[in-house]
Structures are given as structure tokens and as C-alpha cells.
Amino acid sequence: MTIVLIATLLYLAAAGLLVHAVARDEGTATQAWLLPALAAVALHALEHVIGWRRSGGADLHFFAALSLVGLGMAGLTTAFGATGRMAALGVVVFPVAATSLLAYAGYGHVSGDALDWRLQLHAWCALLAYATLAVAALLALMLWLQERALRRREFRGWLRALPPLTELESLLFRTIAVGFVLLTATLLTGVLFVENLFAQHLVHKTVLSVLSWLAFGALLLGRWRYGWRGATAVRWTLAAMLLLVLAFFGSKFVLELLLKQV
Image 1 (cartoon, rainbow, N blue to C red):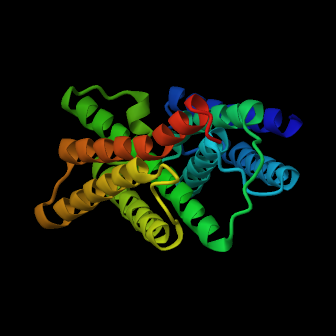
Image 2 (image 1 turned 120 degrees about the horizontal axis):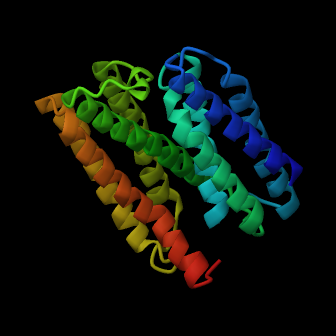
């Protein structure tokens, strides 16, 4: 539990330093947040490694999976921020990662499953895809807020913490493209390696995941073919992400927490 508390405090410290930089109108040029963020991500990962060793396998149940997605989002945000791009994401992502870690520490740690390498590959592709596309959803929200503020001529400190509109939009689509590739790998490994979808109550999860994949694919095609951007890109991104959340965490919540089919 000590690791969890230290990681949580470090996450909150990194977020606080970013908020302070924005409040002082420094944008996110200062890198003071980077060290606590890196330490928090490392400790967050260590907590899962320790948990897996104790339980005898990879714990991928609801709160553990939620925490791993939070870890992935924090890792991506730290990587983006370290290169000078979108450190402002940490204001949202780091508290979310801290909350997911606390939930895992309090309610996770279910006995791990002894998965072979094929199912592990499927699971890790899924978790990376969800984390990447969740970051894309946050980027879409920031793009929407930035466009609205510019239209209203509301030039506040948080706006200066974001990159220019065209750069933010370009980063959004690059992130979606990476997430789309990972989601494609998730679906392919699921088809190849997951057997008997009906017995495992995975039909609705698969259908929603495919619908999300189609939505993200349509968005990328629309961007390439018709130059979709702005509000259109935001709507498609958020709708596709909602389908993905329902596919994974919605199904896990119902099966594991409501129906107790762990």
C-alpha cells in the first residue's frame, strides 16, 4: 500500500505543478512536473508486477484493467509531454491514473489467470488500444474547447498551454491512427485466439468493438478523403470511444461486478 500512496501523491504533485504553470501563464514550458510523473508511472507499474506475482498470473479483471489503462494513459501523456507536446493533458490524466490505481489497490487483486502467450498478446493489444484511444478522446475534447474559446475570443492561460490548433488536430489524428492499428490487432488476435465467444459472453463485447473499429476507420478515411476536421472529428472520436468503453468496461462491469461472473 505504501507504493500506491507514494505513486498517488506523485501523480497529484505532477498535476499540481502543471496547473501551477498554467496559472502563472507559463504554459507547460517548465519540466518540473516530469520527474514526479515518471516516478509515479514507474511505481504504478511496479504495483501491478507485485500483484501479479502474488496472485500467480496477470490480473485483468475490472479494477485491474481500469488501472492498467490509467497507467497506459499516464505513460503516453508523460511521453508526449517530455517531447514538449500536450503536457497539459496531465492535468486530467494524472488524477485519473491515481484514482484508478487507488481503486485497484482497494478492490482489485483478484486471483490472476494463467493465460498462454496468445491470449496475453490479445489482452495487451486491447489495453494499449484503449489507453491510446482514451488519450485521443481527451485530445478531441481539448480541440473542441480550444476551437470554442477561439471563436469567442476567450484567450485564457489554459489556452496558451495548448499547442496551435493545427498541431493539436494533427496530434489527434496521429494518436487515433496508432490506436486504430492497435485495435485492429486486438480484433485479429481475438478472432484467431479466443474460442467459443458465446460461452464466454463475449458476443456483445465483440460487436461493440467492431462498431468502434468501423467508426474510427470511417473517421480516418473521412480525414484522408474529405479532410474532416474540427467538430466533425470530435463527434466521431467521442462516439467511437463511447462504443469502445461500453464494449470493454461496460461488459466487465456487468459480468464481474453485477453478475459476479469473475
